[in-house]
Length: 502
Image (cartoon, one colour):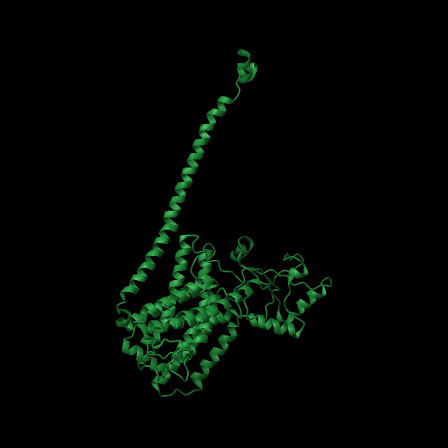
């Protein structure tokens, strides 16, 4: 899915190729390492896609070691063209039809909804054809431009909800779904936490079966996708465990957070989240080892190769391995802490938003929000990593990352405005003590690692250089006195002179 940072043409058809290489060409994947033993494209045809000077300088001199090498024959087909005039023509025809041939209904509410939807569709058409491309290009750059425009629309919707009163905001949801706007009780997942209930002779394990609802596969799939976004095992496990601590800490605010201990640590952390993270890391390993060599669909002679090429269209164009290195410097450490904080805040917003806006967990709007974050989260993480890892080339935060951060903050502000009583419920004292202790430990480690330790190391380095300089200065006079003078050269060495005098 990553947008190419370098494209080197390497597709060569000749009689000197072996039968194995010909089979790979027919299947749509040419492996140069097996055919030539090297990635050196000496006889390759030049690429047909032009590059900007800024991008070319990046490719020639500063390719990241974590970035895979890509070989592309540069085929530019109808599928990859912008089609700006075609989209404009179709949009104009639709507007002409509505204006001249369709009678406008005399329903104000219906016309309002219809006008808002039409305005959003026109904006999406403009964005899909004219918006700036992001770091991803597969399956098509227009797909990611579409989600960028959806991000803008969602942020504007949140801003509109934020500026309404609590009653008007909740009742406005009825315009989306008439079933909304009614207070709903939260389900309590706590209660009887016995794994084996001897009092229930019919089904002693009924507590386990009651917890196996639709959220179990949702947890697994969610953490599988989050692992593909973050691309780091340690960060995923920290976020997973930290969210369980948040559920413990906030169960006095939302009854939905009240779960049994084995539901927290066995079903969530170990089974659902852990298995999702494991499968995600295995997928990352395959993506990092996969060769990224692309041919045009019509350059592949066999039907098997064409089908394989169509399937690979939904895989990344190239791959960048994320190396966060949080302890390398203070900037990266603060960036990683910020990423973890925003992830946890977005997770909490999922529960608090449906609580304050009176949406049941199974409502399609809750599912659409999750699908939305699945599509925009990967782009945002890639833009954040590029901005943090290569600030000289990426001088500003990416557009999708900027919007996702703004959406997360806006959602939290809606929660604070719509139900401040729940947010301000006093946290139990022992929970406060645990969080204060954790924050103090993080601050202490930060001060020691990036300030005290560095000052101590610089002081030791200065002392070592001063001692080396003093030793060099002490050796200099001794070397000068031991150097033979003109008289000593005539009389011989000092040892022989003393021997003659004796």
